[in-house]
Image (spheres, rainbow, N blue to C red):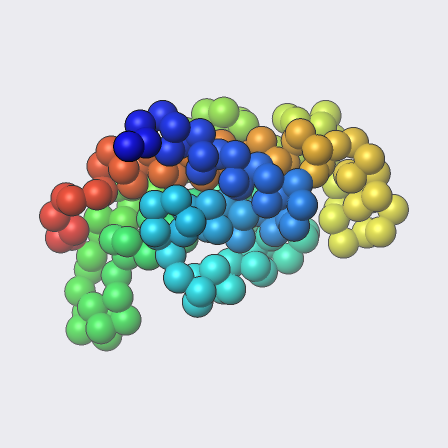
Length: 172
């Protein structure tokens, strides 16, 4: 039987590996979580791609790795379409997404992709600009920089899910 530490290491390593080979930080986090703890589905996975690189590769929005983790938590305890149309004000999701947000922001100083880039690279890049994207890659984005961000976001999300959500009542 796999220990929780081994499971969390596996989650980290999968997200890290996917980010190094395939990119799309939210999808890397979601793939790692789906494969290890069974969270998410193809629709959630597909819907996350536009959040890559701080939303549409702009680097101006929330880091895609953080967004992917939040999507995984929301897939478990977020308000359903039926609950939404019935007017339910289900808020439990924010308890858990805020834990991830705070942990991420504590580590990287901000939830924004451009600020995370400044922390890990010393500057930020406009990922839609070909020359800046080449510099981003040359600086190690998919060697040891964004890869570790994806790994950490996946691990922290898994920790929250395993420690606080699995088997708990999902009212809210």
